[in-house]
Length: 80
Image (tube, rainbow, N blue to C red; front, top):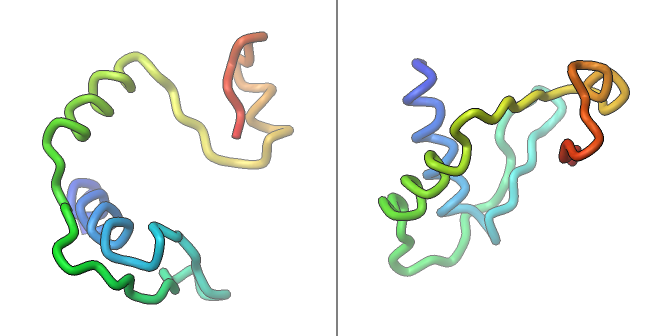
């Protein structure tokens, strides 16, 4: 699956699963029950555009926080 298809699938699952929960099983497979949405908004163009604009020039790292903090970390960086 291409990165674009992966992103589309993630958004779809996030918008249609139970309370937007993201959970995986031991195999790393998505494992969240369906939500009870009557007519979920899957593609909110304005929100996607705002996210796109907000993330310009942003570097997103994924990993253990100890390792992430040592990669060009600055005092005002956000770590979650």
